[in-house]
Length: 546
Ligand SMILES: Cc1cc2nc3c(=O)[nH]c(=O)nc-3n(C[C@H](O)[C@H](O)[C@H](O)COP(=O)(O)OP(=O)(O)OC[C@H]3O[C@@H](n4cnc5c(N)ncnc54)[C@H](O)[C@@H]3O)c2cc1C
Ligand code: FES
Image (cartoon, rainbow, N blue to C red; front, top):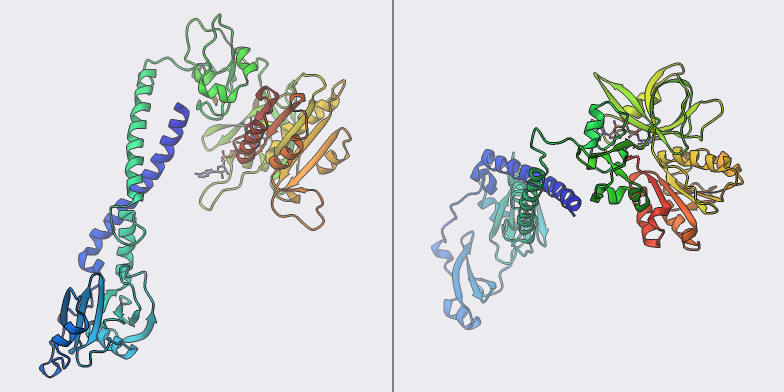
């Protein structure tokens, strides 16, 4: 619940911050432009010609009354001095020629003359267009004319065809002001009203933001987060003691890497984050996330990966597997024992700091002791943003270069349940631990049947295709989600959907599923497995966060 509140609080704050910025920018635009500029009336002539006496209406008021017996009002007006009756019946207006009693007619020539009479700027008319309506004059129904003047403000004058009257003037500054109003009033209908659903929602968002912020603040105070003498979490304590413990979420409870074992008589109650990240069996065995629990004197805590050590890795060879994934093979300064599915924490020198990035072994342990990793070079998502630092650093290494790493970490390892079908679902950089697990299963005394679904956008993103295709023990199902060439006769679509199709025909109580891949794929697969009813303790996943 708190997790959801935190998540929602963060997103609502983002929306509100964006809106506050829009308010500031639009208010600044109002102040800079001034009222006159915003009106669009810079070149509007405000004095209209008087009706000429010889133009007095020949059709009398009595005749108008007889024609419109239900009229609420009758106004004698004029168009360029020519008499016109404006009759209002309820909400309807009728316009009548003051001399003939006929319905008023406005042609392009008259509209042009009316527009010219209402204009006192430096421009000349360059275009006259008959229009049905215009988004620039919201409440006007049309039809009418738009008359464009060639001036510094791109003035256009709208003339109503029914009445021959000027509807309004518009120009470039008015358009800017109109957008500022839309952003400021959050009213994208153009009616400049504060009374609409969007602004009510913004009010509710702000209320939610304040209340949830207050609740989170109270919780943080209660937890002693602002107390300089507060107890550290076990993650902080172990890091202070320079113990080898992995973390890629900074203690947020979302990466699941900081696993420790509590050997207390009474184990701490699992937090919401732990219920998400750890299986029931892990929780029952005393496994917890070090970032979730404050240090207590009575705690007996052990690192989940006790055999962790520092290693200097020496790059032996490097090759590109796909346009974005490189395979790097290192030798280690000292023997390194690991289990397939585990990973090392690499020390990436960057500017004056050392960053930590994690990379999974891409093979099961080998006799020659070489360590192979597959690194996906993270591209910059858009210009102006740097590409991935750690992956960039590793992909730039040359044979003979060295890098420091500690480990191994992780418990994304094969299950020991006998006879169960082993199902691997992955994509992108998730290939590394899945390949290692598949190799380890193959080396087992009595290998279990393996099914491997691997998703990629297109054929060039598939790696180790020949290796998996040639492996008789693995039923390999590559799935392409985007561009598919004509000679592709494999599966297409999303890898989790293809896996789901197959899983529906399986005995779900008799399989183990290993999942690793990009966040969206990982989430879709975990949701799919939950929906199908695959027991949570038969699912293992590794969240790379990329
Ligand atoms: C247990 C585990 C195992 C892993 N195993 C592997 C593996 O085997 N292979 C593998 O390739 N990866 C693996 N990873 C992921 C790896 O650790 C790194 O997270 C990954 O390589 C990205 O790190 P980076 O330093 O290259 O990118 P970062 O520098 O962390 O950047 C990440 C992304 O953010 C973008 N970015 C940077 N700055 C900004 C900004 N200001 N605004 C918006 N975007 C920005 C970057 O361009 C990049 O796309 C694993 C992760 C974990 C947790
Ligand atoms: S540090 Fe990421 S879950 Fe604890």
